[in-house]
Image 1 (cartoon, helix red, strand yellow):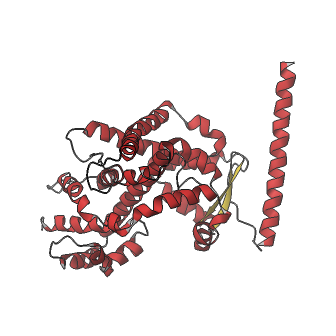
Image 2 (tube, one colour; image 1 turned 45 degrees about the vertical axis):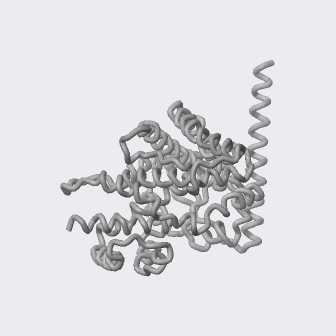
Length: 383
């Protein structure tokens, strides 16, 4: 009897999946025809069914830090800006075509959603602006947008103490270091200061360092693991989750929930410690639930920390290899004569704008601009 039920269940599941596959292919074909789309090139996989070769190759390059080179090589192999691949029964559509990216992010934004990403992002980051769709996304945007006016994001003086600690960690004997690690510590400290009202202080070794350092490490590891899940077929996700990943998630939520609870209590009691702007306190004033506040906070921390650190890393990697760009940029910075610039002054530094826009193509520019100016001031003291 049990065997019959199991076989019946498996047969029903197989029929359902087959029906879903056929229906999906039909809908895609009809849609492509209505839009005049040409057939999409397929990546030449050795394993055309399960794509085991693609999975193993991807995991190998991710572990070795060579994922970007692999991506470039695959597009070159196909000879097109858009192609498909099949992995574990799932079809992946890859594109670097500017018009496709523009359609997804801007002109046809409402035609796309993130069903798979919600499941991947949810356990770590909650359901915030980067994992929501439709009305939920609009709610997140309305909740967050008022908290990013110019007066708040342009508080360049708030970065000064973190910059001093950053500079103190750079060797003065000319020895080589991995500055990307320091950039991630810098952006974590500055982002948590702005968002929580209390820095993680990963660049410091004073009181509370261990707790902040552990949060930063758990956040980094959980983010990396989430990225692996996002690039993997859903069918193998259970195999990729482990106790360490679960432990990192628990620590992150425990760490942040304390700040969220304090902010909610302060708003409820009508108390505020200082006049300093704190992003979390503004979110608490919206009256949303603690879960919603924490989810949005986690989403913004992901953006404020990783994108800025990435921009700094790419930029200084480029400057170290392009002396002419470095010299031109330094000449513009030297015109400040060591003074800390204001928001409008930075916006008027054209060569700095060009360097960021053309040299790195990243976001979070204002914060990075102020860091660059201070780094050049630091470099002048060693000449």
